Amino acid sequence: MLIKERILQAKTDIFIEEAKYLYGSRYDYSKAQYTSSNQKLIITCPQHGDFLQSRSNHLQGKEGCKRCYYNKRKINNKGKTYKKKPLEQRFWKHVDKSPHPKGCWLWIGYKTKEGYGQLEDGMATHVSWSIHNGLIPEGLWVLHTCDNPPCVNPSHLWLGTHQDNMDDMISKNRASWQKRKYISIS
Ligand SMILES: [Zn+2]
Ligand SMILES: [Zn+2]
Image (cartoon, rainbow, N blue to C red; front, side, top):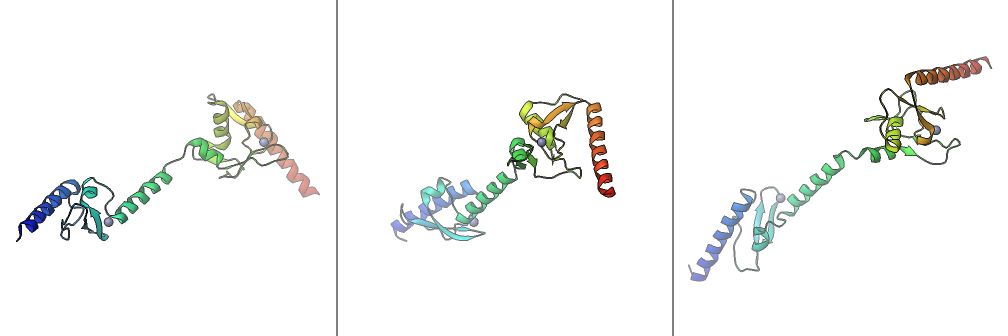
C-alpha cells in the first residue's frame, strides 16, 4: 500500500471513529472512504440507504440522512398541532360574530341539546364571561339577557344567583311550553 493510501485509510478510520462517537450506531460507514477534504463521503442510513455528506458537516452534526431529518421534522410539526391551543383561541374559533338581529354572537361549536355552547373547559357562556370580565364568583351563574342559548356575546350575559337561574329557566320553559301549546291549538 502506498503511503498516500495509508494516510487516506487512516483518515477514514479516524472519521469513522469520530462519527461513531457522535452518532453511535445510527449510520453505517462501510462505504465511507476519505479521499480529500472537500470530497463527500458515502454514509448509509440503515433505514433510507446511502447519502453523501462532507466529513466536516457530518462531524458537526449537520442534517445527515435527509429522509430521517424530514420525518423528524414532520413528527415535531405534528406534535405542535396536537398541542392544546390556548383557551381564548379555542373559544374564538367557534364564535360567529356576523350581524345578528339581536346582536348575538352565536356559538357554532359543540352544543348541548338545550343549545348551549360547550367547550371541554366548560360552558361557552362561562368561558366568554371569564375572557371578558375575569373569574366568575363562586355560586353565581352566567345568564342571558337575550334568551338565546347559543349566544356568547358578553354584553348579553349577566351573573345571577341560583334563584335567578331557576326563575330564568322557568320563564323560558313556560315560554316554550306556551309556544308549543299555541302551535298545537292553531
Ligand atoms: Zn434515514
Ligand atoms: Zn345574545
